[in-house]
Image (cartoon, rainbow, N blue to C red):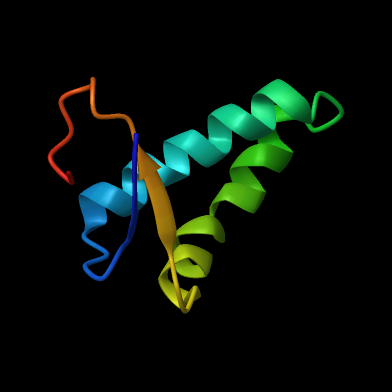
Length: 67
């Protein structure tokens, strides 16, 4: 695993992080409806763009264009 700070917030990365966020929410927030998750998810890309120091962990086994 490699931990790195993201300096280039390309749309592809933001979309991948949105999928990770959504999968995590669906697995842990069973009280939220699909509609609620989608509504909240609309704010996630902008929130990711506003994080001062975005740190991500990348699994080196999976083919990842961001490593």
